[in-house]
Image (cartoon, rainbow, N blue to C red; front, top):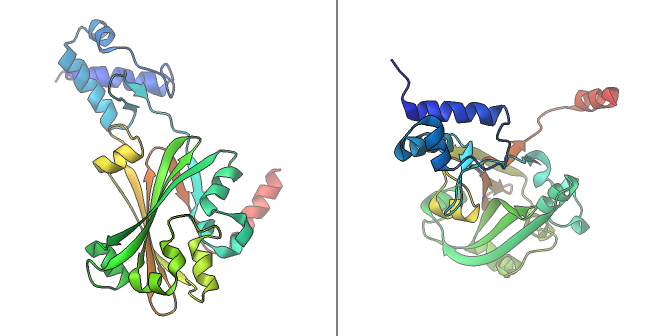
Length: 260
């Protein structure tokens, strides 16, 4: 059976993307140029381009040609990200520090809202659905590119006892350290990671093209007797990689020393 022409278009362009005829960030030829090259209709060419977009290889925005996706991946070590042993009160925001350590430039847009808890979050926090809560939200950038969002929900009973959680500004030492200084020490987190296609709001916030998934990291922080916050981080699927450490990794350090 002959391969449909739109798949031939997609296969040829995919091969040229993979061999870097069209490197990351490069514009593909116009639809008219592709129509002439493949002796194909506009609809056929568009179907081939949509196939590549659905694979996350190319993206487009209104008024612009299709462009090969750039993947300047930022690696976040989730084992250290919230561990107070790896930072000091003067060190500032953990995300900023991770980005700076990678030799890149961080930026955050921050807001605080009073909200009603969605059912799933209320269940995680062991409170009634639609209970009041404070949402601390930030949109995070790396090198002026939106990289991820972070939304943390604090139940009202906790905010009443620790009112800085509701302040409409960032907490310099970090909320985890602030709560620990007030006797609310989080000794464990329940973590879930999933991938899915983005909502329209997520696509807009993270400036995502078609065919690119988001990675969702949900973590619920616990003291010795109850959950105290739920944090949902949403990562641009093409631009992030999460790593974590488990067990004794002294041999890893020794191997790195040997290679130097």
